Image (tube, rainbow over all chains, first blue to last red; front, side, top):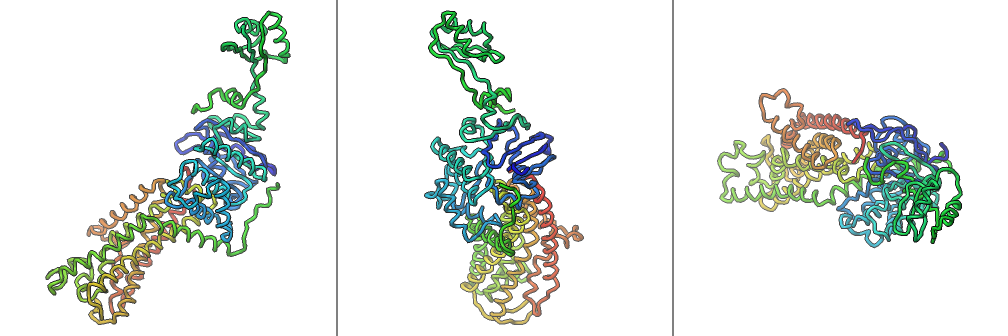
Length: 313
Length: 296
């Protein structure tokens, strides 16, 4: 338990309507990791986050955050946790700065003497310094998102739980926030990042977990997960028809031909791809390029869940 | 990074200071809001309206409300306004206490928790972590502050309007004795405090309703609906046996502060009743809120 920033055992939530939102979840987030939490809409990610933050009580199972049982230890644990949950929620009729002053005042362990300075620092850090005096209802979605992040950064945190932090941001804003997340991780914070953007997880995260229909499908280091996705063989050739025939003979499956490109699943077993090139050349197929494409997290996801990423279960 | 170093920071007493800071933030949230200012503005207009009407009615020197006024046509003390402006304070409070004042309290109390839930700010307060009991206590304290502010708004508006439109000077109490104007001012303050305290029970009820739903509008409507229901029940003579248990049963006891000597019995009974409601519905609100799943 000592090395886990978040650890759940058999965590289950059944809502009053009988709907099983989270089903025996065993999650382990190593301290210091940037942990990507993936899953289609409705897969139970937000319910899990709410249980971790003590907002809802698990039906059964346990959740430990920073080594303490939640929701029992909320008072001692949560001052060390910054959270952005299901989108930002500012007081629209107060300014951005007033919003942060209020959220900071809500934390009984926050020092009121340094409050104003910490609020200004957090606003600067997310790029809201110039808009701090504007009422939050005049903010764009991206600015509200930044304000929510600023609230999570009011104090140095050991764990940051960020639910879709780049939602509503333009590409430049996304880059800034991702850079900020990397920076926070370098400072030693564990980051628990929920996202539906696979490339975001690949770019930022060291570890990831995939949920589908309330259950954990897989978790582990991102590199390992991506490696589980099989690469595809790709041949670029002016003779695609002949190439496809030869590849099929050698056991390549799921062949697709698109103009001068032929791709397919490599044959089972540890066959050297070089044998395929030899066979192609031997058969008189003119080859411009031959390669083994690396698997992406998206391929892994589709392989693991058997469904497209945005499909709701 | 070891996980054993989570400690509760701060010297003893820091938590109490932090709660005061949160209360200040809560008061700022309530009183710097346009809706609150509009409610107070409307309340302030009531004594002005009464004063102007009485002034027009009595322009010919006859008693307010015509010949029938002494029989109790309008709110209490109405007939004395034209003799002494200070009575406008008492009249305005008597006129607004049955519905108007508690209605504004219902809006503020009903919105207290449910409004934060529907705005989504509740989840961020809870992960701050504000502490559910602490949040509820601060919400109740700020609702009580609103009760006081609303009552004082009516009283001060009545005082100023009364002083501008009508004569000042010695007052005649309900008992028929005469007291100095300064003593009357003192009584007016006591009456305002008694009226504000009268609202404490309903404020707790409103707060409880506010913990039942994630919709601020629904909670406000629920609290105000309860108020209207109770005030209707209060007028049904067949329900005599129930009346002493309704939060508004002793509301008009503040008039006893205008007797000489003051009759304290009903005033104390009112305080006890309000305290009972505050405890009952404060506990109910806590029981509901402390273990509730926050899914908004």
